[in-house]
Image (cartoon, rainbow, N blue to C red; front, side, top):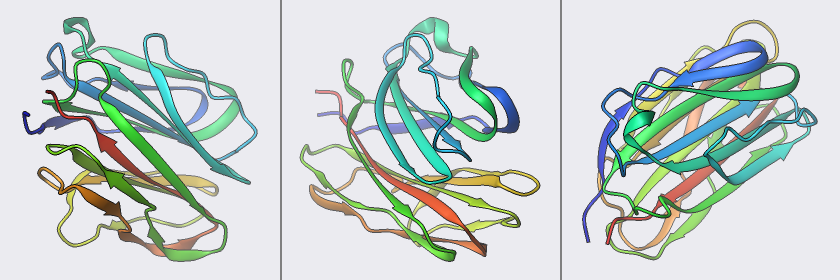
Length: 212
């Protein structure tokens, strides 16, 4: 079993509009595992599936939703644009990340989601199970607020992307992984904090399938 190797991440797109677009890392190679996340500050707005991507999760509560897609990269994906069409004008945080050493058919083994529905600064990812040796675990947090400007990641996590929106109803997000192969068994239960309390949040624990 090949251990996954994190290769690169792009700055995420954080904007207000009916379309959100992000660029796939230039270093992506055919066979790499791609994970795309979109958090929107409205749960009733339609979020389209980009062509060629497979939706693997949607986690939502009133006023916020996070959608996750996966894809096995082709050579044509490197430096390419990925756009998500939205059913209204909303604020969206869109992130794409790439890992090598993932399964050539199913990069994402599982996505487990949770939500916070009260104003708070501490947000904890749900627990998930790592079944296959060589897997990596990703953690994702997104917060809807009027004033959040920073995230603090849990100890021992490698920060891969932080995105901070603007104005009221802004979406801020944080993406991390453990920096290496995760042990089999329980994963998740990690708490990240914002500098100011938000009104709603989504949290994800994503397990990647290793190549065999």
